[in-house]
Image 1 (cartoon, rainbow, N blue to C red):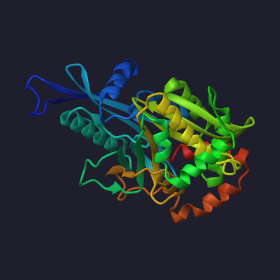
Image 2 (image 1 turned 180 degrees about the vertical axis):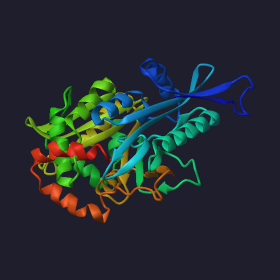
Image 3 (image 1 turned 90 degrees about the horizontal axis):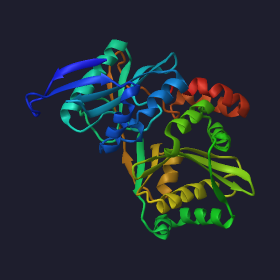
Image 4 (image 1 turned 180 degrees about the horizontal axis):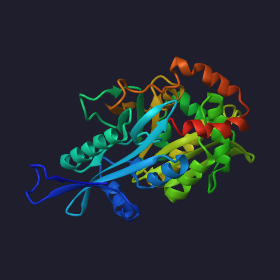
Length: 356
């Protein structure tokens, strides 16, 4: 895909802005732009193209705008076709942040126009941008998710004391129990803890292949940390590292984790280690308003920041509602919780791949 457009009036008269689709030879300069652009996030990285295509078999379009051979903006998109959940074009599914990351308005406008054109061409129900700030006052917006981000103090003890008293007591409880952390190179212990956790919540699990691909693709920027007691796995978390930020993204604990305060200790241990390694921002990630994870993160003293998921409706007349709190999913969740874990782990990936 290549769309050549005239330069905006704010640019020099001999400048042209072109939108292209990213190919393998563009990966390196795409990622150089992402690391340098203040609007970009870990979820704008080129590696997500292969992860989404190989793990879920979804079609992707990673678009970039350039002038004079220099990338000025990027927009990663993936298309999901689902009988149950509709037909969508999203920037970016399975990611909490997305949308356009650009250095200037000209690049942003051209990428947006290309995305709308693509959405119409593919005849999707809707186009979705997962923004961290509002960009379109006239686009339908979903006010469902918030994120939690906080500066990591260079002093480890100050970070501990910044945690509210009741939550700090849970962290100290885990320390007192002698819990230990260990960085894993394979996903086995992580997947055991994670799949056990989401099964209790009645949520379909991602496939092992997906987590293998994340680790394989992002290498040292994708870390697995497991918490155990006397060699018994209690909880585990997969975290992403980007610039000076750490983002615990997928995590969970076994049925025994609460008894030993393993989840509380796990996030503190990640924060402590990140502090030691010079990271400056702890991104606790997305939660639905008034959910259990929302309350958990508030208990850590993090302030919520709204996320702006904006939609361009193409064939649909309303924005999607795939929220598990939607009453129509209640019976499904209850039935899922009753499934044996090995059955849920086998069937879950076929469902969750269509949720995005």
